Length: 514
Image 1 (cartoon, helix red, strand yellow):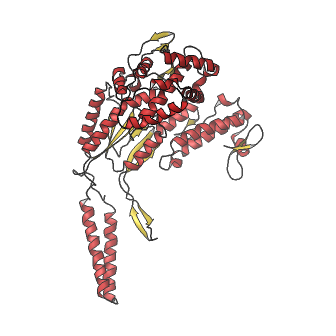
Image 2 (cartoon, one colour):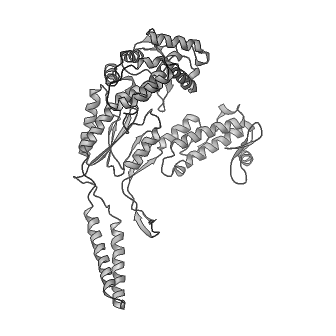
Image 3 (cartoon, one colour):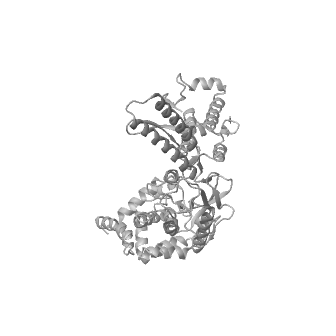
């Protein structure tokens, strides 16, 4: 198929998908060489492109002739996916997680498929979904919580047991058929689902789950849980109640007293052209009363913590990790959790009772590696309005704060061998001694910078990571001292300039900041 025709066809897919139409003729797009070349370039950019599957081939030795032969196999219906090669990688909790490595041929086919599926489904995916989508990430999910979830009273945590391994193939295929009327595309996806895996040269079939480590797996997983997104949107639309929460009675009472005294001051000022000493004294007394009353008002919440006429549900999802926020009673949170559990059961997904539960927002939850909780503060700050006038304003209650869990800092230090952040004790890393000093500093930099950048959304992140910074710097100094057979003091003197910045020389003797 000619490139111009393919591009025109691809451009029409989002519009058809938004209109709710079932799309046919997709398999013909698989004949377009430009799609395959784009898939080749995308796979080549991945760091695992040189990791072989069960056939031993890597992208390095994959010629254009092999690509043409693969396209012919797919178009003629002769292509059959290989089982993935299963390996195990360590998890942060010390356990092992299975990972499937597809062959290069399968990766290219999956990337081409992913491009077509993304064109169809990306326009209709929910705004509440942030995982494995263009221009979305963990940070966009967390920023949504930080900006929108103010006032949340309860967090509902729901953990799906082995989500990627327990996706029901029949349900997934039926969901795909809602949008895709091309049998050949559906059959190709089903072949990937049922390709199985090879572990210690023993073949095992896959009766559920998406292709482990497969390029197409994330979007298939999003298609499956898109049904949960739709369910939550329907629930929120039906159950959300009220326009805004009512004012707290005590706050209202104090506000009325303040307004009455302000009115008295205005009456005195308007009734007299020149104020007498007695009037000035009355105004001073009223202002003093207002100051006392305003201080008392700022010590009580302005909005009612429990308003039966106001209720809000919040929802955000990143892949199979999702969090629900409730502005309402605990019974509202329980009903929400029961409804979600029942809906997931319809998708043949089980909920882990041990890891799921309802938490008070002030106690917080851990989501996407962040500690999330609400914070109530009576702190008063000075604010300037658009006319340049200064006034005091109290920080609102129920603000969402993001923090770095201490366990994450400990795990990070343990994983890289930095030392012990709780006691601020850094240790050297003997495995790096044979590297150059520049390479050692670069590795420390890359590791530490990646951790800091991920937790950049945290409140006062610099203060929260101060102990980690100290441990990392100490570990670096000790590693360099071990390499030089020198003392810490001498190493510190050699790498720090007059401004307190740390530098280490590369091989070309240029100084590079640490």
